[in-house]
Amino acid sequence: MSDDIRGKVQAILPSVRTDLEDLVRIQSVSADPERLGEVERSAQRTAELFAAEGVDVEIVRAFEGAPPAVVGEKKGPEGAPTVLLYAHHDVQPENDHADWDSAPWEPTERDGRLYGRGAADDKAGIMAHVGALRALGDDLPVTVRLFIEGEEEVASATLPQLLEQYQDRLKADVIVIADSGNWDIGVPALTTSLRGLIRVDVELRTLTHAVHSGMWGGLAPDAIMALIRLLNSLWTEDGAPAVAGLVSGPAAPVEYPEDRLRAESGAIDGLSWVGQGPAVERLWTQPAITVTGFDAPKVAGASNTLSPVARARVTIRIAPGDTAENAVARLEAHLRAHVPWGASLGTTVVDTGEPIALPADGPAYDAARAAFTEAWDGTAPVDMGVGGSIPFIAEFLEAFPEASVLVTGVEDPDTRAHGANEGLHLAEFERVVLAEALLLRNLAR
Image (cartoon, rainbow, N blue to C red; front, side, top):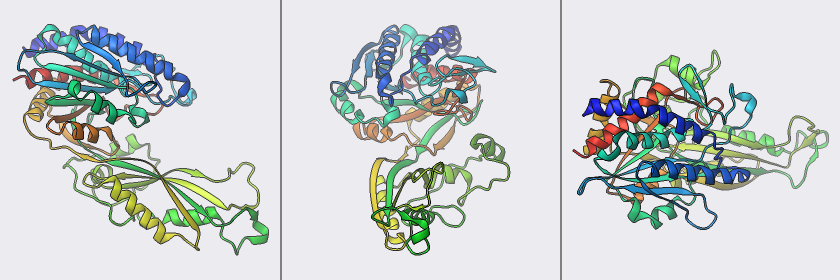
């Protein structure tokens, strides 16, 4: 049976790749109002792909004008488990085309990778589901339900409403979320923890209006000076977070080689790492604080003026075991305690997402580990943490508390999701499709 599934996956892979390339050509950038028609087109094409595999599909939205999601079902044998397959059809903006080695909306193969925006994140996740169903055909051993989201890249604002409205059509014994990655080329992984996220805009005001730096410099603190002093307080001398009360924890005993860390991060020669403890803890199970934006006069055209107000966006990746509510409270308390020179502080919470630690045991995980080990020719999957955030997983857990959640994916350390030259490793993608087909088989046992 295993050899039969492997042979079927090999046979259908050319058609799966063709369909993936067609999806990549659709510019489904959910953050761009001018391309919302493309998001609609990608939902339609996604629905057609699953309908061709016998899935009873429908395009749904939380309300009129909301982003389109695709839901569906293909029934398996009576009494078989129900498996919900998740992916998303919207993608990140491509940004400057000059940064790409080939056109971002024209899928291009180079050295065994397929390049294009969404080629991995997450249109390959969609096609992994399509490929598994195509390979199994009429021999589907479980009932499959489907949820392909259209707003994951813009924070899944209507997801809670959709989960509530369509709960009866999405309820499952096992949820497979194909939106993560594998440990390395040739080494599969199951993602078992993810950090959460808070984003807070911080504003400091020191003056009611701008004044001449020659007249008042040396007496009146300008807002940029004050904000730099305040932001500097967020880290210890070695760059570890200095905000008290944030949660940290141990990570899986995985060795992250130094050469991979430097190559994958793009670190310049001689750069020292920040923080304390093993690399995987700093990346997966400790908080990280970053300033991701700064509002102040530009260098070009800057005048000799004391700025009255300055703003920064502070992002904290919060560790599993913490909560967004706690992190916001701890950050705001820290900022209040460290405001310099009596400046006026304002904070605005932009958005939040909860961290996740999945209980990586039980029959569904046994089935997944066996499937991955078989697909990767005897290499067992790593239990991997992810430093980034997939906040909607917490919403799935809340909506379906009895379900086992498996976080899988198509990415590898050089995928460059969200960046220029995003690419899918084609040989690994074949293993991902095979692993999912084997997983559906194993879940029926």
